[in-house]
Length: 169
Image 1 (cartoon, one colour):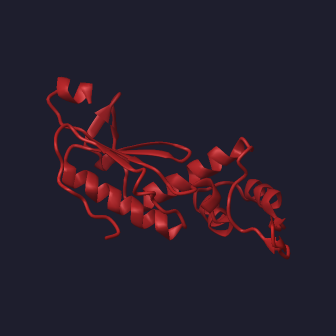
Image 2 (cartoon, rainbow, N blue to C red; image 1 turned 90 degrees about the horizontal axis):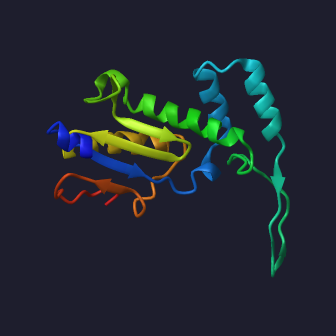
Image 3 (tube, rainbow, N blue to C red; image 1 turned 180 degrees about the vertical axis):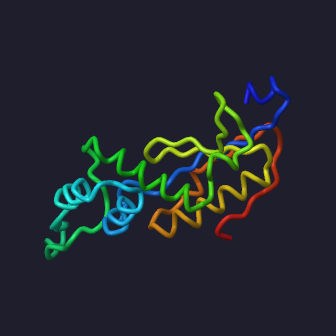
């Protein structure tokens, strides 16, 4: 924002929070995404084997459930999880049409409209309307792969007052 003021440009930010991001990564969709992203088959096969045949049971005060298959989520303690989620997020951004050449904000010689690491995503635009458009595109593409925006924790930072936005009614 400081640089925006320095160069007399308004920059609007949206800090996206996904609800249970790492828990909602669908394994079957992840394998397809890895293939589409050009990850070699032998590496995808290795990852599939790592996540194959996962089962769980739930114990409560009322007893224990039957064992069931787990088809979602990446390991929280695994160093690969952030990388896998980064690929998932890259797929979302590409499908949302957030290509670098369309971005209006230039940082270090590159056009930028989003910054990401694992489940932390920031969208940037030079107008409120453009930011809202980016957010809606990301929301739609995220939902297609099973991720939901946590609207209560998703925040907007603007150089001045903004109009009220309605997302999901």
